[in-house]
Amino acid sequence: MRKLMLEALFYLAWGRIMKMRPFAKVSPSLGDYMQETTYESDRDAHRQAVQISKALHLVSPHVFWETECLVMAFAAMKMLERRKLPSTLYLGMRRDEKGGNAAHAWLRSGRFYLTGAKEIEQYTVVGRFAKQFN
Image (cartoon, rainbow, N blue to C red; front, side, top):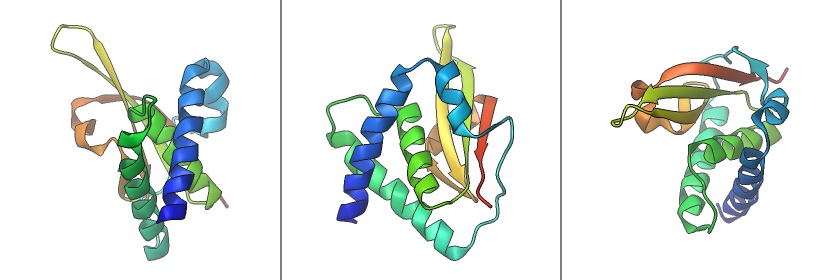
């Protein structure tokens, strides 16, 4: 788990840098636009996704930079990519209490949501990016 947490630290920093870049420059690297990966996964892939999620959630509160939903999703996607595990990044929008817009991002691999799963029912999906490996 320590190695995984160190990897999570690295990719959280990478995710923060990606968030600072214009989305039009970042989006081509996220996968196939408006596509989804399968909900099927084997036991080993599910176990790896759970471990990655745990590592990210353990490390995230202890860094000095912002690691909210999009940064977490970018980091999780990259960690899955290193293992050649498919993932789908979802981007959602909703109206907040003040009438403004609120955005959210979450990441799924198989049936497991690695990041951002708590609030997904409140958001309408406005974008999806599928990262597949053959």
